[in-house]
Amino acid sequence: MSKYYILPLLFFAIVMTSGCRDKEPPLVAIVSPEDGALVGDSVRVVIEVRDNAEVYYTDLYIDDVYVDRFYGEPDTYIWCTDSLQPWTEHRLCAEAVDMALNDTVSDAISVTVIHPGTIRWVCRSIDNIQAYPAIGGDGTIYIVAAIPGNSMVVYLFAINPDGTIKWQCHLGFADYGQDPVPSIGPDGTIYVSGAYSSYPTATFLAAIHPTGAPKWEVEGVQGCPAIGVDGAVYIGGGEGLHVYNPDGSSRWIYQLPYPAYNPAIGADGTIYFGCGDGYVYALNPDATLKWRYEVQLSEEIAISFDNTIYFGAYDSYLYALSSDGTLKWRYYTGYFRLSPVVGCGGLIYIWSMVNGEGRCVALSPDGELTWSGLPGVWPSFGSAVAIAADSTIYFTSYDCDLYALTPEHQVKWICHIGATPSYPLTIGNDGTVYVADRWWGLDAINGLAPLAKTQSPWPKVRHDEKNTGRGGL
Image 1 (cartoon, rainbow, N blue to C red):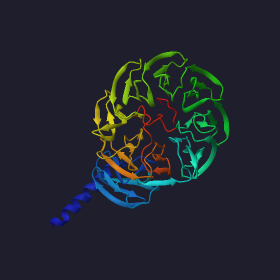
Image 2 (cartoon, rainbow, N blue to C red):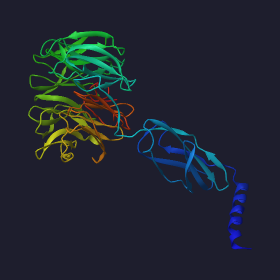
Image 3 (cartoon, one colour):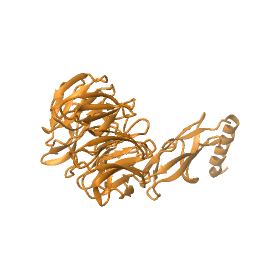
Image 4 (spheres, one colour):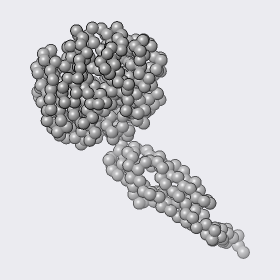
């Protein structure tokens, strides 16, 4: 018999013999990406197959179209999505066949393709943006801004996830002595500071229903409120630190002869804030003094998992204080407007001068410089850094760009935004990066992962997308 007939017959005999013994089909599943995931330009598709004997081959289908076959154990397939429209949904499934020709089709998964680093939408219906946006549980973005053409009168704007205006609530006049950052309580109430007239006259705290209807307001306080686990609202004022119940009634006041500044709350309930008397205070939840440290805080406080607090001071140092109020270390930055962010692994990100250039830098938990930014890239003033759950580091530059970096600080992509170098930013639950350009509007940029609220102790200024200023989950 010709040798050309032997191998096919031998294979047929093996299959028939195997078929007599093996009636059990293989198990097959697509294990990456996950069902419902957002995916980028290059997607690693991982198929897992198990069989009681031996796998013959596995086929991969995307949108019911065959794309590749793997013999034996399946390998990783790299799916290039460059040609696909952003925010389109696609279906993946796999079929596995064993040596006895038993076959199984996996459960299908659906993924949504986006193109990270591209602009999703731009809202130009707002102007003179005052500070960081907040994002509600339904994806609504809240931001304090003016209507173009009248920069002195400001409103709390609610913006839908598609970039359209949902509603606006009048807050008063622009107060250039503060940054009215909205914070969101557990019941969805938005708390934001306003001004009755131009600085430095009377200011107030307003509580606004998610529908845009005012609930209540109290006078004589200003700044960025912090929200306790129980919904209590903590805010500074000329008489010290004020705490209000969710219904607007006063809970207690820690009285001081000088104004108290934006508080931050640790996971253990400790309240930290700076004061005009030149001290940083730590209070117990029952309003008793825990400790105070003599230095003039300049901007926002960040808190690590071990309750170390980080803050910038007017002497241009970044300070790290232990939970008992003792100095761990300080780092000279050459710049006093510092609002630190603590990333994955405990790295602290700040603005600093390096060899005469402004840089976004990373310090270790011990205060050692571990990364000195990108040469020639000046970060925007203050701290416009946010950390995503996939460890992507976002920061905005003076050149009107949004940078996305890997955990090793390599550039993933750059997106050009806006027109002025003042960019508070945050990250939504769907991974969208929202960048507020003070005089240009609000930009939504496609990203893949939400804010790193479990991986990082303080992933952005005011801690989370709701700007609660409270550590922990």
